[in-house]
Figure 1 (cartoon, rainbow, N blue to C red):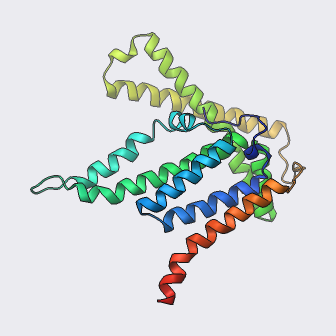
Figure 2: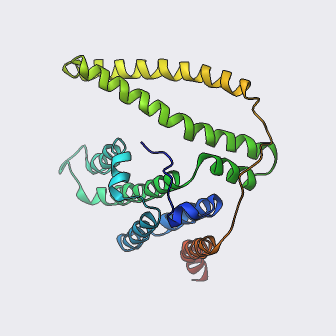
Figure 3: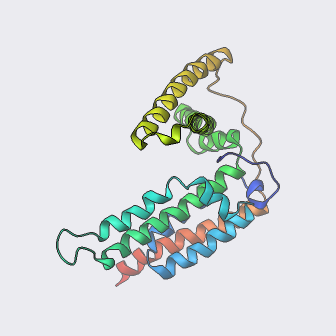
Length: 242
């Protein structure tokens, strides 16, 4: 389950704002360099960042195993044609590169979630966006990070209970209906409990944020982010110069 894992890696020591900036500039570079050579370089960078964040690639694949079939289906669907020769492999090249680029971005998201406490994410968003809008966005981020793993656990328990009662012998449609209905009921119940808990704890719009530090690791992350931003802007600058 994709949640925060305490540790002492470089990724854990970075400020949340540095990691958010690094992700944003990486996304810009990923959209600027969509050819295989560019994606290969970005892959090497992602593997290095995952190693610095103590996030094995196997963990990333395990977390996104439900998303991988959809990423693989896009190129297959794009290659199909309604006329002969029915399948055009060349048409699948672009969607395949786009799906792979999405996987790289998801890998960085996994590293961010595993190395960043929810409270620090809330504070980072609140510092980047001033005033009550920033606090509202930070609160939304915190609720998603705290609520989503709980819902995932509920769905996993529902599937395990259904399998223990020979539910896997039912049709796919029936299994989806049971899991979706149980998940929705659990989500509504937990939402009501969450609302009561927030009122009981006097939710504050101006909480005391955690201490923010900017060290040498953050300076290196900032330098890498600036390099990625420059590399993302370079194709547009070069095209304008020509």
